[in-house]
Length: 138
Image (tube, rainbow, N blue to C red; front, side, top):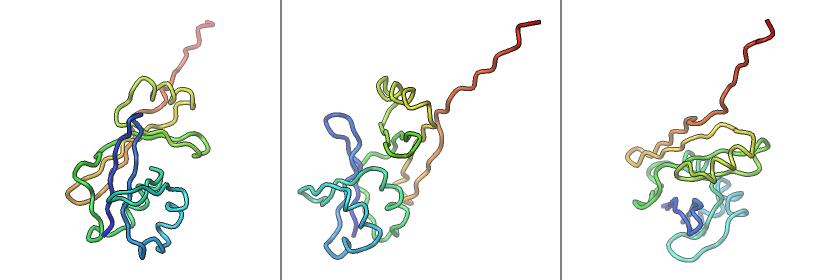
């Protein structure tokens, strides 16, 4: 069984915690995520970057997956132009929206996890406003 939990740390950042066995670490699906993750103690083995959450969650069967009951069920995310940095938060705070404007106002998505059938819905919630100017020269 693979245990997954989305949690917040003291700074308000979303953490993706993953609990897998030694045999599952050899799986190609987890290799890249484990290379970039941090090993932690407790019932979860790794603290994985959040950008690996959706690919891992979608490619594991429902029978093998356990989503923690205290896990965050919905969060916001956007990335910079080159997809190098991902910015996530549970609510659109002032600092989050300031960072969004600094990055050029990319589309912000809301990722929602359904606890019943383990499906993920990702939909756009904020877009760059379009401004139209009228010709005032006449």
